[in-house]
Image (tube, rainbow, N blue to C red; front, side, top):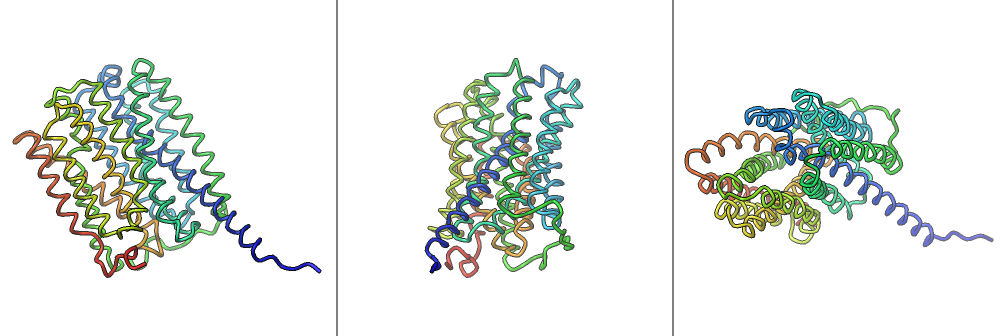
Length: 403
């Protein structure tokens, strides 16, 4: 007579769960690396060759960069609204398609206008990618692994940026070939995401759309602190993110090679943001947030203090990259916990407000830099980081501390 084997059944279920976790992790990590690393940040590394190839002036370069913020914001709003209705897989695949299309347009661009359009389309893929991945993880990954998977996926943006730097440095004269490879890589990632998320989340294209356009409640308890902290984090990061490399080259007189190295290190160190989930579990979200915001503020001041000393600038860039990516991971956790019934909305809101904070602060920091110099401008940004360090979730509402 056959007997049930609960131990074997549990083992099989655990193996299936781990396999599903690996699929979602790889799909999410590759999509974030493709959309953030290739879709959004490749343009900045290739600006010197675009300036010559398409006769771009400084104003047009700045307009294209500013436009990427606009398309990012529009895409993240659309993604946040559409993910609960269409499903995580459909929106994530759409993000990959945007990145592929934008990169392909730049590859074959005959004019500066086509380059601009391609950069804006590719840049919008970053806003479209985070909300569906957050929902996929929240719905398909066990709670004990959820924070770690979320933050590892998020930190893969740093890996994408780290890859872009050396490629850009080595292929300036053959930039179209490099961008063709970028587009092909994004296409391959998009196909993999379509397969992996369908298999791991059980979603299909004919899944019934959900009717709700907005999360309910729209502003749950704790959302005000989340919104304010996200805005301050974005504003505090604007100095280095927008003007850091320019300060190294124009004020510090750093060579193109050294400044590129600084940004490669910034991206590579961003991979350390994968530790955000472990920090949250060990210290609690509030302590992890406060300490990392303070660290980002210190890195901001350090970079402006000695922009002409390579080792110091490289160290500052690396610390900034690690702290920035960790903070985005913490925002991701914070957003999904605050909006537990609609994780895509929580992530979308946090990342949208962060981008708006960057966009609002950039011209202010630029004005301070022009009038008073790099150090006072960067110190002002660091002050915002210190202020934001006091705006983590309250101890009573920190779910990680309460576990």
